Image 1 (cartoon, rainbow, N blue to C red):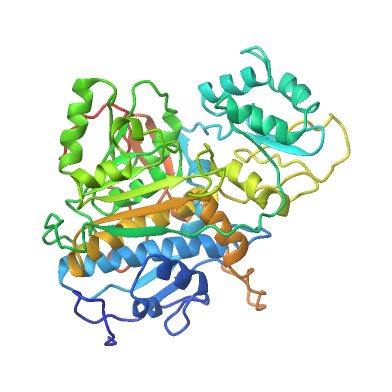
Image 2 (image 1 turned 60 degrees about the horizontal axis):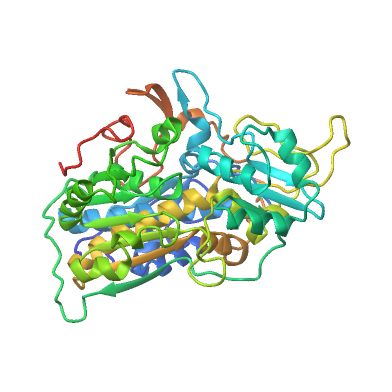
Length: 503
């Protein structure tokens, strides 16, 4: 055991997190992990005890995706360990993150099977398409997004991918982008690498300066459930937000996802990200449902939102309105395109941000990817020679990475509120911020040292469990600290079928 300084309010000693040949062992701090931990306001002395192990040859890309992925999981693991030390009164446990577990978790939606069936990740109208002057990326996985896209282009509601390709091929990419935006559809022109740098996280304290916002005591908790008793309202969809709240549920939080009964959700998506959580449906425009939601909010510790910018403001859920009645709340928000600039208010998904900030252009490839579950590139003539076309990251890394960063920020806020200063916390994340970090803030992958990497076999980090959806094969959680949970306490239940109450 090695004595070392600990953050205010934490006592004890800790040992070294070893590493099987990877950077990040004790005495060798990993750069991206240190960057992310500093952005989250974490005590720098804890970084020395973060280690990595497992295969290096994972998430291959022209960009340092492996380094981003393992750093986001490492800071989330360290934030969980920090909270565990506060709530158990024991030393901060050592953190050891396995790169194989990280790589498997970062493509959890591709590993999912339901009774042996592999879900379709991208719908036929989603993908890259040739335009009159370049390329455009569309996202039409949800039926209402597909309908808006086809209507914006003057196509019939039952138009197929071939008809869509024909129309897109006649128009400039930016005209398609703006026409889709005006119609509430989703299409983004493939752009060169953007020089813009967005912050990785923005955070501020609320109600803390005067000590007017004491937080709810949490008491003790077991080492593997440092967030036990924490109440989290989850108003997110798709991947980034649900990954964050899935991680908080893993660590013991009571996570209740709330959706509108008027918005559809894919069962397969919920089967992947619904582990450990409960799910209910409330119409915030209906007085009775709104009253139920307000009762839940009144005793929640954390609210996570990921809807289109401004969508919740009409229901009195803007940050200003929330902190006026709950100055002790931890509010975490996710946007696609950042918090300033002309794109800040636009809808977006990981794949679209990759196209819009230059990742797709950076990753140009010479052939169409065909691997099942991967994103597709459309509009190549049958039998034509391969051509350069936009590429993609080996994972929805902006989504997953942002999810782990958000979970880490929430965990750090819970510790910080109870060891340093009470009051609320306002945390803001964006997929563009994570993309900016990947493009401009992380050094390229290290040059191989001539030592063979440990073979990567994802089956080591896959498990099977029965659920209301059937037999699920799913990725195991990658959170790694001494005593961390190895699986969720419950499989996903049917979307929207739980009672709107706290446990």
